Image 1 (cartoon, rainbow, N blue to C red):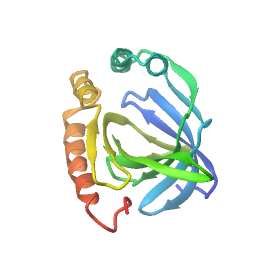
Image 2: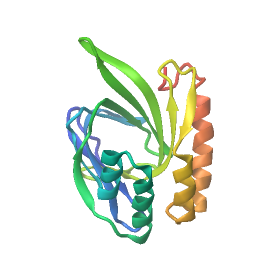
Image 3: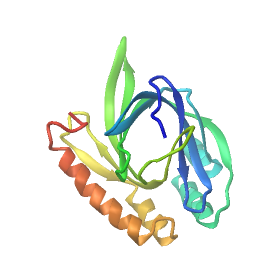
Length: 194
């Protein structure tokens, strides 16, 4: 499959191994190079995600997210239209890695300021004609802009998706290896974080 053109709109889809689409997000290609597909989106970018996830976000109720994972495990649940909000996103997705590195930017005067780095642990990329498929495996690493602090996020949900069978033992081992790889990258002056 040939690469994507700079400026082209692509769709990032989270696809469960059952083939069911869990979410979709429209992204703009910044660069499609061997080491990564680099994409971006701004507030207003079109998305579709589980209606229970949208409800949890709107109500600020994390318990509804639990219901969303249970619906995913059983193959139930509906996707709802949504849109990217609040930040500009720059996403760096290596093709064979079990993670993507995301930079979230807020408006700051006439420019933008890096709010934080966000490492999303997910399946390696599967290219499609319209973009790429992956699957968010729920656990994340939030990193300060200057790389001095970091913290794991959503580990409780990660335990839940393992219990529900959404994340297999094989996927869990791949995520553990990817966690170590990312922690090393945080200390390397030539990594994407630099």
